[in-house]
Image (cartoon, rainbow over all chains, first blue to last red; front, side, top):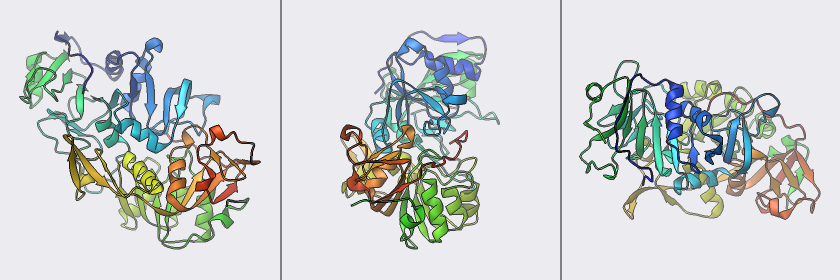
Length: 233
Length: 230
C-alpha cells in the first residue's frame, strides 16, 4: 500500500528527460528517511541525486544496508560489492546480513521503495523485466521477483518506447511476468505515470492510468503514444 | 567435531559422483575458489551445484562447469557477461538449469537447514517460475509452495574460524555462507585464518560451529576480480 501522496496538479515540461534528469526526478520523489533498493543498471543512477542529509538508507540484495557510493582506487574491496557486482563503500551505520535475511527484509515489506527497469508494465501494474522469452535466450531472474512484490512501492524507470517505437506501457504484458499488480509508478523520458492499484488515485479501478506530468509532449500527444486510457490527476 | 586442515584437496576428496553441492558466493564475493578448484582436481562428476550464479570467467565454479563436471545448476542469475563456460554448456544441451528467484533460492536453502518441510511465498506468483506449483490464497494474497533444497555437501568461504568451527565473514562476502553451512550433511569451509578457541568473541560469531565439519586454511585466498555487471 502506497504511503506516497498523489499530487493534484498536472505538469507539462518542455523537453524529454535524459537519463540523469530522470534519475534526479525519481530521487526527488523518495521521502527522507526511506529504505530503498535501486536494483541494478540504470536505477542505480538515482543514488547520485539523493541529498546527503535525506537520511535515505540504501539496501543491496546481496546483504547490506547503508551502502555508500561506488568504490575507486584503494577503496576497492572484493568482499564489498553491490547487486550489480560493482565495488561499493559502506556508510556509517551500515550493516551486513546473509541472503535469507536480505530477502526476508524485502518480502516482509520492510523496504519502502525499490526502483527497477522494465521491458513492459501493464496498466494494472504487472511487471515484465527478466526474460524476453526468445528462443536461445538464457533466462536470468536474480532478485527482481522478490523486490517487485516485496517493497511497499515499486517504481519503474524506463524509456516509454522501444527502439522500434512501441509503447512499453501496455494493456497486458506479452513478455513473461516478474510480478502481478506490483508497480505503483512509472518514470519515463516523456511522462510520469501513477498506477491505480487500489483506487488510491481516484480512478475507481477503471483501468486508466494517471499522468502526473509530461515532458516534451502534451497530454493529448501522449494519449496517441500509449494503448491505455489516461487521466490527469 | 570439526577437522582443521591445510589441504583443500583432502577436504573435498570424499565428495562422490552425483552429489548435490551448495557453493557459496555472490559472483566472485564469497566464492570458495580454492575448494572448487580442488573439486576440479578430484575429477568428481555429475554434480548438481546450487549457487546464485553459474560461474564468472574461467576460475572456481566456471572452471568446474567448463571441465564438464556439473550435470545441473540451480541458480537465480546464470547469464552474465563473463559466464561463457556455462553459456556454452547450456547452449550445447550439456547442462540442466533450474532457475529460481533469488529470495526463493535463499529461503529454500534456509528451510532445509531449519527443518522446514515447505513454505508458501508470494514471490513468483503469476509468473512462469511458479508454473505447476501449488498456490494458496491466504488473507487475500496469493502464495506459491516452495520446497527446501537439501544438499550432501556445502562449500563455503568465511573470513575467520576458531578451533570449534565458529565462523565470521567479511562484508558482502557473507551472502549465502550461513544458510548453506546449515543446509548440508557435510559443510566444508575455507577461511583466511584460524584463531585459537576462546579468541573469538561469542557475540560476533555468525555461523556457530555446530554447522561446520571441515575447515581449510587458505591464508592468501584469492578473490576473482569483480566484474561490472550482474
